[in-house]
Length: 227
Image (cartoon, rainbow, N blue to C red; front, side, top):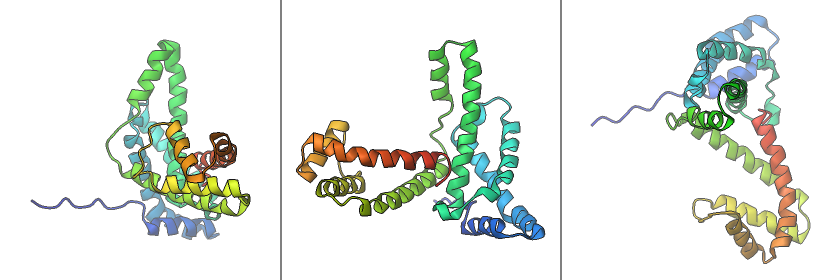
């Protein structure tokens, strides 16, 4: 049997560099050439893959929405800032997904006027989830964890008290061992943290709340495409 050929990546380091060069250039001709040769083809495939991966194809007038999104991406190209720490692929794929989610929400409001809320909510959950085409999901997940670990490692300098350090290190141990630890619910997580730190639940929760707040800020920035 012949081995299945690996699919060619449509968003490579060359495409990343083309976007950086586009943002840093003041030469209109150069920017146009970069866009036509590298950026536009990558954006076209990225939008199409996200639409099919998340089954946004169920949206009314999806072909028009796809074209609208691709045009919209060109208008925000200059807003990409690599100094925020995110790759261009991560930045534009996240905001593209959120753009379509916004369209889903608008369509859902229309559905809720026509059918009972419970039915509309169920339809939303079942219609816009597709288990196929894992390329985008796997790559996005990988970049999310890479950025999250960078964020978590940056917290170390802020935790000087002994209790804070213990909980911080315990959280890092659990996150780095998620594939090897059987975690069924929140109680199990707190049990692991208590065993690793030698602290009681109240003490663990106190220090954990600080990290939880910082994680919420990180997650919001990620969802908004700022990371």
